[in-house]
Length: 342
Length: 264
Image (cartoon, rainbow over all chains, first blue to last red; front, side, top):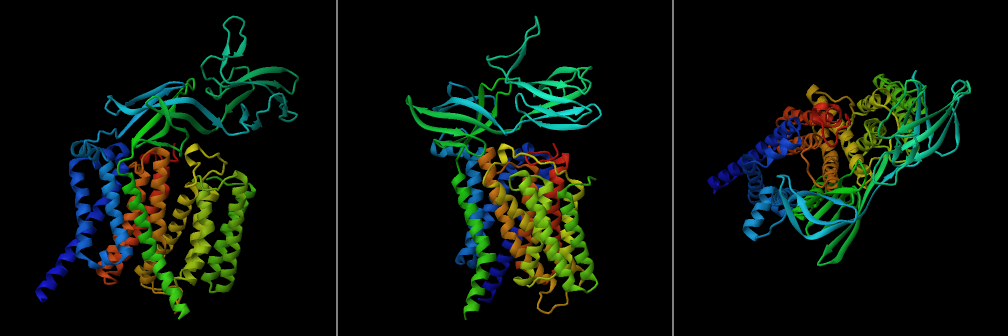
């Protein structure tokens, strides 16, 4: 009996040392990863030696649950350690290797991640993969509209060559005084797509696809001279040698919105306006607002991500948080309340 | 170095000065005066934070200026909670920590108001940053206790308060769940905003490293108890070093460019 107890103790100690070693290794791996960057770290953690390491983690956690009866008996400890197992299992299932395994074992052919560039009015089911290949979704995604929203009010920055500056709210037609030494600024009009004719130099707002936001600004100098200047959002600080002021017109983006429809068998089966932080979830995929056509605002770029393993990871997060709070906070609060009431 | 000749700046400098004065008074054994000054400094820090909130029209936790302003404000409640509930001392050091964390807000980082970019317009923004800030102050307090344990003395001399090794453990027990929640909320938010709950971004990796150091501390302490108190304290100090790198180096250095970088 004594020998059995002693070997049990030795086994438990070995499990604890293994866990501590894996924790220390992961600390160093995280620090190393921070230096080499996200892309290389992603490749490293998906490599074969690291796959063995993650399996060792899962194995040690499961062994610990078996070796330390308390871990399995005390719910809060079980939640914490079981949560870690769930997170590892979920992330393995959702990884590249996990997707290959799903295909081989269960015949589930799912795209792990890719991108879709869709023009307004167009529907598409082709996803561009990282290896420059394309894969098909079992449904199509249609972009009905893409738009960018800006914070209001929008400001124009006026700066002298000596560095003195003013921030003027963009209100068409209203005057803004820069003081007796500098004169007055009036914003005459705003353009979404500024163009100028070669003959005659006539400026106009082109309704054709394009994106060149600008302001026409009239400056009445203190000496009475009047000049017209243009401030271009995409060319900040654009200035002529005779201009006394540098103008900067910069709108701050508040949101990117893609209005999407999911079409399956010629029927619209889902609709959502996706924004950053508000993806569309359909058919085992999440669709994210990734990028857009910066030249003309005609198309959107969506990131398509498989949701495999995600529920396991989220369950693991929940278990971990509940376990940690229960073990380190709630247990003591309840004991305190109990003692007080007694 | 950027001195702020604004109401915001004046409030920060006033809070810093009062915290420092409270620290000096406590060192001179004028503890009651020190405590009253510490409370007064906290009120000024709340005013500075509130003023900023009014100025930018959103919860001011967007950039390092606002984060350090918040840290300077939450020092007092954490210190009060630790003393009253956890029986952990070190109030004198907390006053100094308050002044130290306000220094970057007062003199280093720009207070230029900024609009929230689309990625930060999420309900997870405030809880994610706020729980991290709270946990950092707990961990800073724990680090002070660990250093006290290294020095082999207790500054407070109050019999009701715990000895440094136990005080370190108890403070970490209070801060670690918040650190865990911060990490999990960040991961969840990353999934909603960028499509991945873990992007192996340098800041994510540094925050994982700091979380793991405390996980290592708990396991080591479970294995050996108080037998190797100095090694226990070394874990805690290493955890704080990782937190400082997460908060400052990973944010500011171009060496760690990534989704969280404020350097670009």
